[in-house]
Image (tube, rainbow, N blue to C red; front, side, top):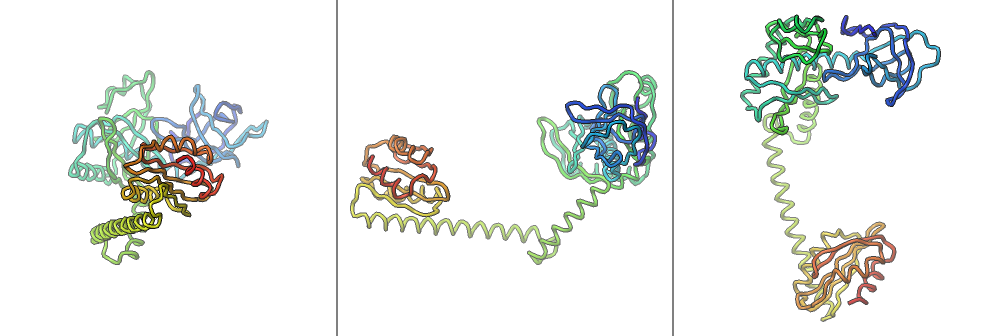
Length: 394
């Protein structure tokens, strides 16, 4: 079996090793080494990345008792020894998040009798699922304070391989589901857990933890958090956003929310007023179109670039005041035609049937009520020609 250097020194990022095997499977080409510092995916913690010589390692998985290093390209035949280099930032980040998770889960379990049921360490988001249906703001604040107290206290983080029987002598967080030897991660007075992940030697190296919020997940709660350098990254991101916001809205930070809320309300009022004015204009345009038709049985108009929603609103306004007329409205768009076909209340005709007869002209689709149909298709003929062809069916 491959010697796992990451258990001996989680901060080791370089090593040399003999090649045991070069092969490939459904994931791609891979190499098995005599010893490795690359951590394989497992226990909720993602794999390490880095390079073997100058070839990028894109995945590391433990398959059939082999630690397989999947490479971006195949290694040259006859390769006997390789120099490995780990992405240190990724490794340290994973150590901080994983150790932070142990502390956070321990606090929720011990202080509030809320156990953790799952853990996900993503590139941007870290979450745990907690066996409860809700969390209060007060509970979150107190839990975060306790987590950071443990981090600042700089408890040692110890790991030890032992039998399951030996491990059961400790106050385990949850029963072990393995046989044979198990690796126990121990934070004295805080947490005892079977875990195969990488951890720093003390809680102080987690630096800090921030609980970012929660959402409901089935009958549980999914809590999002950040630890270590991710806390600084998020603080930097938020500071940058606030700095840019203050350039747009010249107010102190504590007044930004109130000011932006007022701006949004004012914008909504303006949007509402604009919509009312547009509706008035459409009503005026509808009356103008009706007066210009002088009692024609078929009213048709062709527009350039008008949205289908505007055609619908205009069509409803016209038909409301023209109970004895048919209506054809067409809008020529880039590469397509859109249309509204309608009839007044005193006309007995199913406009869906008219649409079905004429939509093949533009390879179109559409539908609606018997008195009002909308649709669209390809710009195979111009809008006026399409309107004239529809008119012949009325």
